[in-house]
Structure formats: C-alpha cells, structure tokens
Image 1 (cartoon, rainbow, N blue to C red):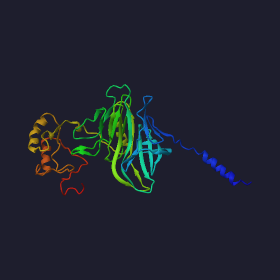
Image 2: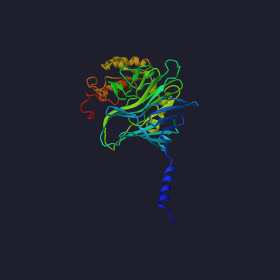
Image 3: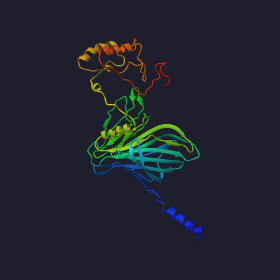
Length: 382
C-alpha cells in the first residue's frame, strides 16, 4: 500500500493542532490560601482565599519589572506558560513558569506554591537580553502590589508593619495615612541605624498582604510602603544596582515572596520565619538567663568612663538587674570588636573586672558595618 506524501503532511498538521496550546489571555497560580492572577501583559494581582471567602487584595499592577536606561520596562506580552510539580527544601509544591517579551527583553516568572506554606507564593524572576546591544540595567522590582482600603472602613483603613531602621526611630507598626511613604532600605540608613527583617506588610480589617525576600544572606534591597491617597497603599521589593546586561545574558532577581493573612502582621512573620528555618536558618532556643533584666551604660553616653560603670554596679545589683550592657563607646570604630585602648588600657582585663563585680555582662555592636576609621592592622576589608 502506498501512502502519499500529501496525506502524511496532512496527518502531521492535524497532530500538531491536537497539542494543547496554553491560554495566552491570562495565567492563574493557585495555592491553598493564595492565588496570583496574571493578565496578558504580565501584570498581576493577589487573591486571598481565607475564611471560606475569596478577597481581592487590589487591582492588577506591573508587579515585576526592570529598569533599563532610566525607564521601567513593565509591560511584557504573555508568550508561554507551563506547570510542573516540585520537591525541595520547602516541601512539595507546584511551579508555574510564565514567559513574556518586550522588545529585546524576555522575562520569565516562576511562581511556586507549597503545600506546607499555604499562604505564600515564591517568585524567581529573570530577564534575558535577546537583542544585539548591551542593556544598562539600574535595578528591578518584584511583588509590587496595591492593597485597596475597604469601602466605608473606619479610619485608619490600613495598617502596616515597617521594617526599616532610621535615626529618628519611627515605630514599626503604623496606621497609614494619605501621603505616607517609607523606603525601608535594608542597608545602613545612617550611623548606627540600618538593616532589619526584609519584610513589609499592609493589612485591612478582612485581609492583609506581605512581601519580602528569602535569600540566605542579607541583601541591600528596599521593601517600600506608600499610601499616595486614601484609597489604597502599595508595597514592593526593590533592588538598585547598575550593571550591564550583555546580548544573550540573563539577570536573575533574588527569590522573593508574596503572602496573605488575616488580622495583623504576626502571621506573615511566623510564616517567613518558618520558611527560613526550612531553608537552613536555625535559631536555637534562648536560655532562661537571656530573659533577665538589663542595665545599660548608654545612660552615660558614648563617653562613659569605667569608674562610672563601677560606681553604678552595686546599685544595679541591688535592684536585681542580671545583665550589664556596654552599649556604645567601647569599640575603636563601627564594625570593629576591639576595645579603645585609652578607655581600657589593660584590654580584656578591664572587661573581666566588670564580670567579677557583676555576674553577667554583654557588649552591643553594629553588625555588617565598617567605618573608614576602623582600627589599622586588624582588617584588610572595608
């Protein structure tokens, strides 16, 4: 029997047509308590599935974008998406990978939801230069969402957890008002002030949303919160760094997350802590002695003398304080762990005198900071 080439070609066309093509009008990523909905421009919104109800957190926004040559590239035409099961340190889950294009950039967003973290969705975002010329990248943004105030809600309609540390020591828990804006930069914002938990959160009466990153080391990101008007607030994870993206090269963002909850921010921080524990960050239980009352020498300022400390110790002990803290002014410079020789001419022996006169003492330092006047000979890194 002879089968014509025309017939075989026709069968091939029919077979190709039978392969399921993805719907390119939208993509949904469903977890047990959270759904991320993408439109065909790869803008997204978050749906909280809590208490037997679905609650729209806010409208579609250009949630993941890259800044190139001073312009935010936010619109990417949805070109493909696929789903697969995964098993990793966070447990069993489902990953949806979404691809979109914009001129000479290809964007890939992989969103993973896990059985053990039903309120969270984890994001791995990358950008590839598909053109023939270099691209000057200034930074990127992940998980920028808007949370709408509930109609008719009592004032304040929105509250927020702010993780940034600043010289003026703003409170971490704030009611949001129109015009509010805080960058929450995780680097140093001034001498002695910086760092923090890389999470921001905004909530209303029926639901809330938090964003952050789950990298294993600190990253110099911001987790800004803003409320431009009384109708809604925004939050995001942003990173600013000038770099060149060569033709064919890819840029990967940090792994970030969006999470939903009811009531205040405690649930978000608990889920974040649990996820970091799964990834390997272990926090040992605090000993009972850690909860003892503390007397701090900061009352004498940075220029305290040891005679002042020694003079206070009998009263400190009589009042029942179990810890003595040498807060600031004992170190040669920020970032150093070396005693100031003019204040402690006998070095460690002077510190042992404090221990002999009081059972417990501790020092307070600023981690991840290096001042220009650090002790010479101790470090080669700045």
